[in-house]
Length: 200
Image (cartoon, rainbow, N blue to C red; front, side):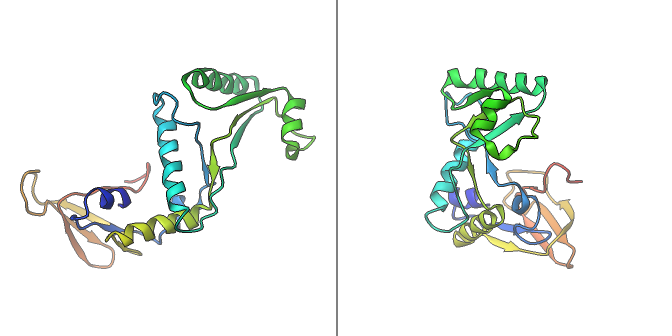
């Protein structure tokens, strides 16, 4: 909704939120944004991560959501995990991405003593450009920014039915009718379902 509003301020954008903003995965995640730089832009996931960091740096000037460029690391506790992380670093670094491999339990513990002496770690990969946020606060910041651009957000509004009224994309009339659990009916020309991978 935020990016859509930024792209075209003339569109009326309505978000129907089943619960509350920041009450589910977007607000309760670990808050790590995995980033390794733009490199040669061949890695779609890392490109998205870097674009996310740019958005965070922009929003951090307007609100406090505990944005910290802390870096991130991933530990490997089996030979298979070591090889997978080694391949990741080996494949990305030559293309301009930032990452480093630390091999050996003692070397990892020297860098990250907080893992404790009982750890079964064998190696770790570090990604210094990654960052961390308070996910609930960030979700509210994004919602506030969207609302400032004219987006309407209706909380406690679960969608129960979507009907297609018109199959023509060129028709200027509304194409969809949406009904919510509160008994209201909405009409839209376009719909984005952003309910996650488990939506039914």
